[in-house]
Image (cartoon, rainbow, N blue to C red; front, side, top):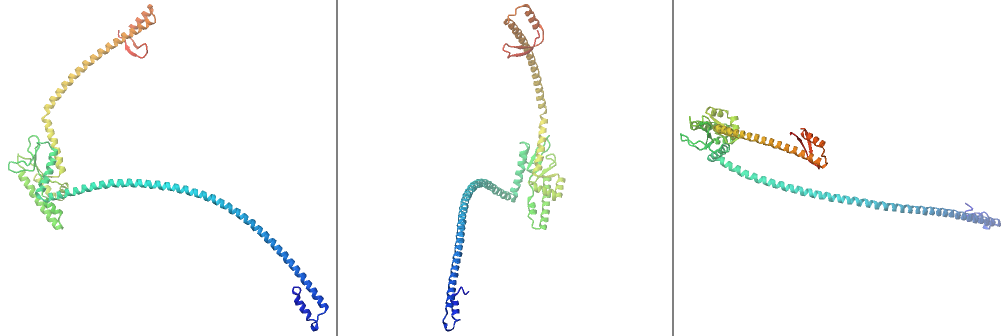
Length: 408
């Protein structure tokens, strides 16, 4: 520390001499110390300079290393930038391709959806048209139902409706003249329809007046008591109507002993047979049969078959006569066919003889062409012509071949 601070050493030396007057020794020591301090300071400076130089060299080395690293980093960055640029270009190209593909797919999908939408709209329009037509039909049917309800609400029009339906079934199933509508009986009564029976039997009477008021009252009854009262009224009305039919239309020797009571509804007919069995049995005892449209149609078909059988029996002698004429015609046809067969047989024989002559002429012409005039050839030809056998005749061109039997 003394060498490092000479002024502090000099002050300490001056203090050692009394009176403040330093001696020569002290001065020399001071000078020596100053020199030593100067040398040390120079050494320190040189060392500092060396250290600074070393630090500068190290700094330069570090700077050079940093520059080298920076250059490498710049090269790597350039390479990375180039790689990134190429990858970005490829990525952009791939993205553009995918976008183009997606655009095409989206466009095709949109076109398909548009087509399907148009097709669905077209089908929807067709269905709406069908629905409109069905709605129009329903409206017209509703009008018809309202009209039918209006018809059935009136007794006279309801009777006319049942009679019209019965007349339609009878007129469709039987020929004209086999039935009569509103005929007059000997007692002055007018049944709705009479059907002529075969073999001169009395006609069958059909009545189409069905008491529907009590039936409608049963359907419209608000309580079980009202429904029971309506059922009793319906039984009374049916009994009265069945008794009227039996008394007015069942005439001995003029009509059949059984009459039909026509019910113009299958559902009403089923309800009567299910819930009013006593009414049905009372009608059977009175020889009045309750029939529905289907049963009446079946009865009409049976009657039509019976009438057809009667007409066939009436025309049986005419049919037998026609069959006899047909057998005569068949006998004459058979005789003429046999004659024609004989003519064909004779013509076939003539054709065979002509073929035999043509065969002889062909062989003779062949011999003439070959200049075979010796007796041997003639005798052989004669023997060949006289021998009956199956031969094949060929023309000179070899195109015509006939197999014949020489009968001469």
